[in-house]
Structures are given as C-alpha cells and as structure tokens.
Image (cartoon, rainbow, N blue to C red):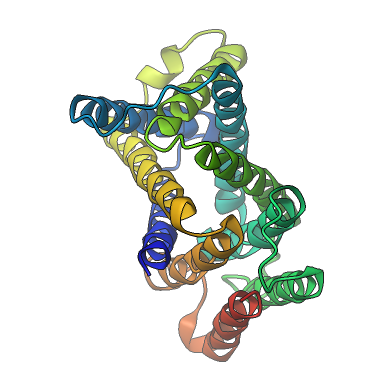
Length: 291
C-alpha cells in the first residue's frame, strides 16, 4: 500500500514541476540552466542531510555513477524538449503526448528486468492507442481556426521516449540498492550539461545574469519539485515493480490537464467540456488497462 501511495505522490510532483515553464517566457536553454541548478541545490541539501543522519551509507560503484551521469544527460534533453513542446502546444496537450512514456517504460522494464506482471504486449498496445486517442481529443486549438503546432507534438513524443529511458535507468540503479545517492549524481550531470549547452550557444554565461530574479527563482523551484518527483519515484521503485509505478505515475497527465485548463485557460472548458471529459476518461482507461 505504501508503494502505491508513493507512486501517487510522485504523479503529483511530476505534474507540478513543469508549471513554472508555463509562467516563465525565457528561452528554454536559459530556463533549463536554472531548473537543473534548482535540482542540484535541492539534491545537495538532502544528500548532506541523509549522510549526516546516518540514513545514507551507500557507496555507488563506478558503473552506477556512469549510469546516473547518462540519466542526467537524458533527463536534461527530455525536459528541454518538453519545455519547447509546452511553449508550442501548452501543458495540457504536451503532457498527453509525453504520457506515452508509460508504455515505452513498461516495454523496457518487461524486456530487460523481467517484470512480467499481468501486463503483456497486447495491453501495452491498447494503452498506447488509448493514450494517443486521448491526446488527439485534447489537441484542441485555443481559438477557432487556430492550428496546432505539429512540431510541438513531435517534441513531446521524443521527450516521452527519453524520459522513459531515464525512468528505466533509475529502476536499474534502485535495484542495486542506491536510493539516497542517485539524485546528486543525476543533478550534477544535468546541471553541467545545461551549463555547457548555454556556454556553447552564447560563448559565455553572461546571458544568465540578465534573467529576472523572479524567473530564476521560479525555474529553480521547478528543479526543487523535480527532485521530490524523482525521490518519491525511487522510493516507490523499492516497493513495486517499475511497470506498476509507471502506470500510477501516469496520473500526472490528469493533473496537468486540469492545471492547463483551469489555471492557464489553454482550452475553452465551456465550449469543449464534452471532449475534455471524454479525453480524461480515456486517459484513466489507458491506465487501468495496464493493471
């Protein structure tokens, strides 16, 4: 029961950590620099706390550290593509397409970790079709005759593939007993790659200084929230197979849809409420079919 609760909490944090991107209008490359910095600060604080309290006595091996470095790179690329998708098609739509990470992750875990629960390839295919159907239903233009940016959809799906891989790598590391140390290495890696990207683009880091203090704080808050999403997911992986955790975390799509519609008014609720309700119901079915 605790594992299910941890996975549910994870789904909430996964929907919350992307909200600052909707508020911040900075370029993605600058936003991710502060996002990864916030993730690094939070990871460092909790890593230090767990070590001093004697909770963390883990000594990751070099192969594990290497996996976490790769995970940091893939997460940085994933969140960068996701941020671009949010700018192009909004949180509610981008999250639906990125939600394809669940069937992708389940395929990886069933193939390489032998997590053969009741889920099989047929149900995974059904879930994928339902997820696509829900995404199409919620791909509603904000204004009549307005076209949906197809590149935004492409970026969201590519982000889903990368995020599924990062979740798979996290499960690998968790299976090796590394829980409290994994986030610090992932955070260092993602921050270094984000900084390097900015440096290669601008030849210096002066552009980061010009960003407003409010936007810096909001971006770092997103990184802080991602730490908790990653942390609770690792704890859930301790209790449950990655397949089941991925299914429950898919609830983040529901929260993101609600945020996008109620807070950011991305879709006219009064005009399209039937289509929105149908999309949410199909999303729930895409989750339930995997159990």
